[in-house]
Image (cartoon, rainbow, N blue to C red):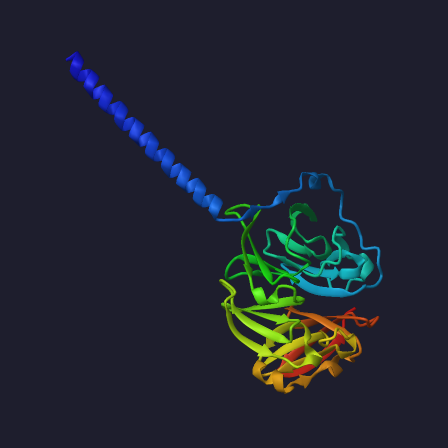
Length: 336
C-alpha cells in the first residue's frame, strides 16, 4: 500500500513539473511576443506632475505659424518661431489670452491627439513629446528622443489607431501607438522610402490605405501605408518642386508650395488640380490670389465645417479660414 501511494505521489509530482514547465514556456513566449510588438517604450517624465497652473501666451502676434487644428473641444496653434504650442477654447480669443501647452520645442511644426494623449514634434531637437491632460492643464509626461532628423509632421489615424510622424530628412515614417488600456506610448514601427533619404519632405497625407508624400525632389509619391511600397509617382515642374502639403477637397487636390527647386520663396503659391498626372505638364490652377498672395502658404486643416490655411511672411495674414462648395472657393477671411 505504501509503495502504491509513493508511486502515485511520484506521478503527481511529474505531472506537476510538466505543467509548471509548460506554463513557464507559455509565459516566456507570451512575454517575448509582447516585447516584439513594439520597438521602443517612451521615456517617462516624472517631474511633470510638479508643474504649476497653465501659463498665458505672452505674445500678441504669431511668428511663422505652421499648424492650426481642433482636437476634441480645444483649438491648438503651433507658433513655430516663438517655439511654442498654444491652445484655447475659442478662435475669437486674442492670442495673448491663449494658454501655453508647451514652450519646450525648438521650431516645432504640428500637434495631434486621440483624446487621451497629444503628440507634438520637436523638430530641431529630433524629439516627439507626449502630453496628457490633468485638471485642465496639459502635462509633458513622456518623450521619444532621436526620432530621425527634424521630425516635421505628425497625425493621428483613427482607422489604424496609430500616430504617424515623419522624419523630414531621412524618408522615415515613425509609427506610435498607446499600449492597451494605457496612456503609455510605444514606437511600433519605422517604415521608410529609400529614395527620400536626404530629401526634404515637409508632410504626408493619408487617404484610405495609401499615403502621399510631397517631396523636394520634384515628385509626389503615392505609397502603401502598411509598408511604404511605392505605388505611383507624379513628377512636378521645377517651379512647384518645394511643395508643403497635399489635401483632397471635393474633386481637386490642393497643394501648398513653399519654394521652387532652387529653394526660392518667390515661387511660393497655392495650387489645385483634378489630376496629379497633369502637374508634369504645368496643368494646374493657381488659387493663391484668393488669399492675397505674396507670403508662403503652409499647412491646411479642416474643422468646425471650414478649412484653415497657415501662412508665413505676411503680418496680419497668418491664419486664413475658407470654404469650398461645389469646387468653388468662398468665404475667405483672415483669422489672425
